Length: 443
Image (tube, rainbow, N blue to C red; front, side, top):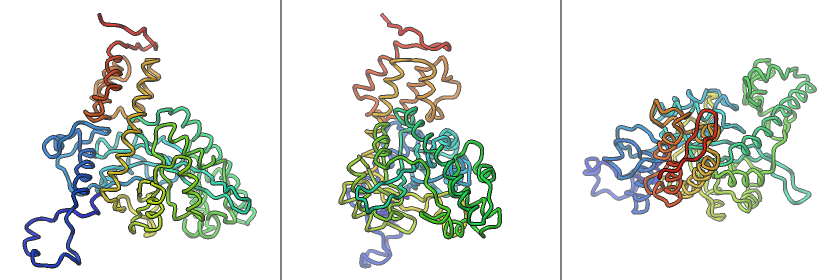
């Protein structure tokens, strides 16, 4: 939730407080820095809406959203899961729940897959929410000293609304991890059987769903259904915790390799839940060397000072999210329950926007080299939902791309010389349903 830094109170409410000391429950006025940050974040959230034109100055932007008025408090949730990995809600139901909780910007960060992003973006248009395409990548950190032990590390990747610049490369990388998750699930089931807790991998796969790589939560749900444990918490506490009697690793890549790939595909790399790590300092140091951009610092119970200090020490942006799965119960943080200060969000966007612009530029340049329908589909895979209905992604590709640009980029970004050159070249390129058609030049 953006705005934790303090907002101006209602003048009428303040009328009776003029003589009171500025302490206790009274809210502080925003500093100049906070005011500037709040305006910038608000412009980013509401650009493209009619409210933006009248309330905050700014053009269309990355993810156009329909909004009737500009709110002071903007709720961000940058860590959530759906049934496409180990969550309990479909992407559309997740977005609906986020809307009910007042979330305005949501990142779907399923484990090792981005398959739920298109559905989430479609639902987000209906509810007036922005989606930041994301993924939580499962990795392994290997210490350089012999006495150290490997431990699982999760890296969050945040992308522009048109996705990674090298989607096929990232998809192959994630597919290898998902294949390892199937083997991992089989190993966990095997260990449980040896512990006299009979379970079948087919049962786990059925719970996970068609095409979904099973994770620990799916094994835990199978254990509950088989009567071996009372609930998911008990399954993890007794058997499935890191290093537990039924725990198993998959074929996760090195954490540094994942960070480097996120950077190469023009994403923002953020270390997830560092408080769960055994040696966070060593991991953060190594990952910073590999190009890590930030770490999670904020949770539903507030900012963790130790990790905030680490972020400051290593020059990393500070983020956070609910890590919502939809399991229910009092132990899970709800969507929108993390209060992100406006200054933290502002720093994140200052870092992310140039990276995302680079991704958009690279994707469009690849299309110009080969203006085929296949490459056009890559452009609109995640971001077609904001374009005008009736504009076909086939046969009207250049018009569709121009509409996408108006949704993805601010006026200032679109007027950049490189994007101006791309738009100019687009006017001389055409495609047909059979694939590439020779570029045309207007005389």
